[in-house]
Amino acid sequence: MSDLANRTLTIEKTFDAPVQLVWDAWTQPEHILRWWAPNGMAIKVIQHDFKVGGKWKYSMPMPDGNEFISEGTYKEIEVLKKIVSSADFKPMTENVELQIYFKADGGKTKFTFNVIHATAEYCKQQEEMGFYNGWGSALDRLEKVLEALN
Image 1 (cartoon, rainbow, N blue to C red):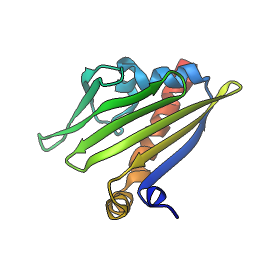
Image 2 (cartoon, rainbow, N blue to C red):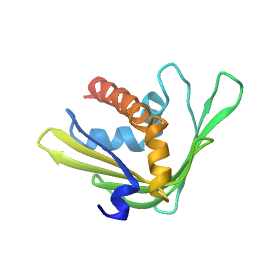
Image 3 (cartoon, rainbow, N blue to C red):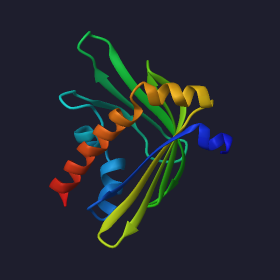
């Protein structure tokens, strides 16, 4: 297995929605507000400059009064196909790369979400910390948003 494979966590999903709708739900702040945060949590879009070199930053107030910050910089954008971004999810996950792929499949969208970590050890730690539960539940919420929009 390659080093990259040892440092990557992947979720693949097929959404029952056209690629344009899935793309919009992932890239437009008014939709992001509806699915990015865990159930019952609020989210604020602080910055959303959707272009290569542009920054994004979202904040979730935590019950203890602290804020959970998600932020990054867009590295690559290929409309309706691919988004690559650096990402920090403070305080839990830092210095990862997100690779999001969208592939039209009739009226559905094949979706691949890769998170690349600096080391295999860090990748394993993130997986054990609940990567698949956390992102899985966010993508389930995204699916519900898509159903409502479709």
